[in-house]
Length: 108
Image (tube, rainbow, N blue to C red; front, side, top):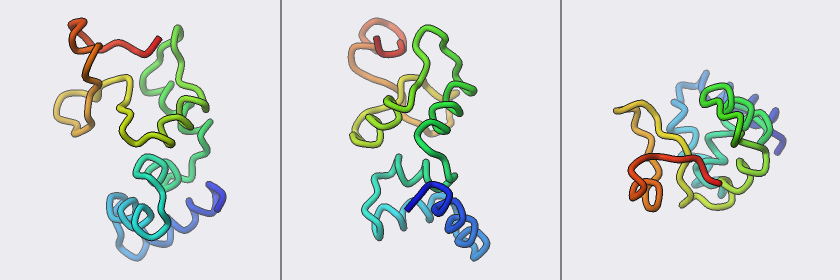
């Protein structure tokens, strides 16, 4: 399905009372999408649109998010985002080398 078709289906399912979380769970189970891809297409976003949204929320002129980054995240659900959400937002933060360096850094 195309992103626009997923967006239309998501709108129908939300009108039927599904939350975004339930919609993502359903598409992971029934359509075999990984959670990040299911979340992206639940908004009807292409990979480029998801990258554009990311760059709007977390601008980083030296290391902008690209369609390729979104594609790689979609391929590997174990990969964590390169920027943290505000405390308490419920999104995992990057661990490992970044944490040992004393802070969160975008990938180089």
